[in-house]
Image (cartoon, rainbow, N blue to C red; front, side, top):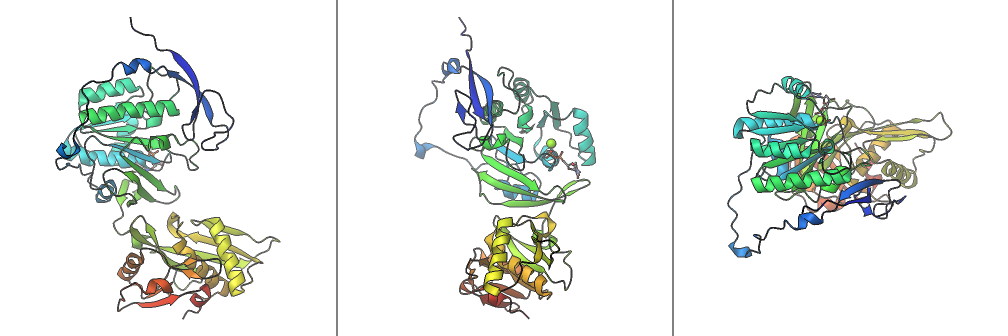
Length: 453
Ligand code: TYD
Ligand code: MG
């Protein structure tokens, strides 16, 4: 007699996936308040009867791995982020905020892949076939082997994957599909996990590469895809500022390649184009001879990128002066202002201070500290900096300038873009090869940095 599945109620934290038999106001694991949602789970015990007897341990030295053929996405930068292309049978999660361009990126990639390798199955649980066709027309997609399926039910999707036998399956998005036999609604942790598990089993058994798209909100509040990170082989995040055109695709995890790789794209009216010279694009609109503008080099993964930091210091008309930062951490700004006041004796208490990183980039590295300090100093004193100068270094609470990593890469990139003077931590100066066309100024305190020609 077939056993009836028993239904059990449990409470699952929508932030981290922690489960509890009773409702809790605050998650003991991730400390989030009000994150528990009631979910009904199937009694999983009947599945245990299906354990395959065929699987047994193998001797490690006898296992052979032929050279893995990787599918090239047709986008050089995307391939780089993936570690050289897509491995058949692998599961890739692409997370990002709604509207950032995930569907666009994937449809463009599907076009390239379909032309080279054959059948691609694009499953959308969010858009109708006509909507996808509209996007495809906008992107001038003309491949003849992309199959579209507008469907939400996992069982139907799995069945269609088996029938179509594509090289690659795209699930857009994991939040929009659900397993019919589970009573929880789509987008809940239980559904997301269960659907991903089934897709993974199919991907591995049939050797079909699978790309799963997942929405992540800015504050990570309903971070369903986070719980999938341990399950999939590769996790990529597609980020950017919705008010700017630049998008960054970043590797968070990769079982088949390096992490910390990034690819930069530009969102245009006809889709995404790769930015092959990211270093120069963020500084092209730099104003000439303007106080408060400083160039520094940040690292995006292992790639150096030159960015412009701008500061505007002006006397405040309020009792409490304003401090605002875009692209850098606010507390970092406050700290640097305090260092400038204390160590350099600048009287900034009556000044409004605005600091901005151009191009919508986020600079969270400490190596930008010195750039921020010099931008504020330059604006406050109303002295423009040398246009051909790059500044980098971490600033400590004592006003000391501390060494930074990847110094050679940062220097080489500055030279490539025609900069002639580099202000850097004195400690770093010891370990670099001198370059003839560049003057190096090694400094050990913020005060020394302000002595510029
Ligand atoms: P979309 O790929 O739908 O985002 P996601 O799947 O991450 O939710 O793209 C969202 C935005 O991109 C949308 O606001 C319109 C813009 N866009 C362009 O600027 N150019 C284009 O060619 C396309 C297709 C979209
Ligand atoms: Mg989309």
